[in-house]
Image 1 (cartoon, one colour):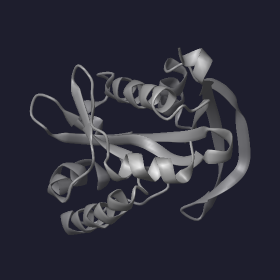
Image 2 (cartoon, helix red, strand yellow):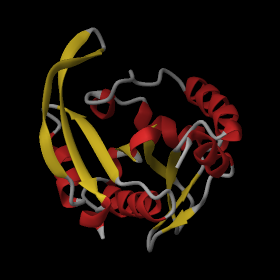
Image 3 (spheres, one colour):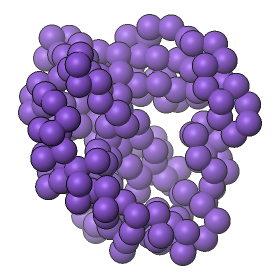
Length: 189
């Protein structure tokens, strides 16, 4: 899979359905739902970005993403509830290594929906899409050491812990240790 093929696929963001969820592109109309969790310091504690400061900021961000979606340069889905369409998080690919048929995934969830196996359900659909449709050989995920809940999700998805890169990312003014887990296509199947 090469960059042009990925851009073509994601310029028409595929919709993925699971028993409880619809994974779709993010829209400016999701601003209030996204702001509900994106404004919280407890949500962004283990993320690379700071809490959103206003619904207007969130809407501006979602409007910016419209251009990224149009060119196929954004690979993240809105996690929405099938029953009412409410956006409760995001999940998707954060980067591709085209030369090695590999990708990294990431996710965030509104804390009001934790404990209901939402992220594993969404992540399974995205990983299946990656292995079956994008023909990836490897999918990995990174986490800031201390975010044990995220590592548990990765391991639940069949990813194996591969180690910690000490002080490898400067996040919010502090060098942080980053853990890595990964799964190969033949292990996922």
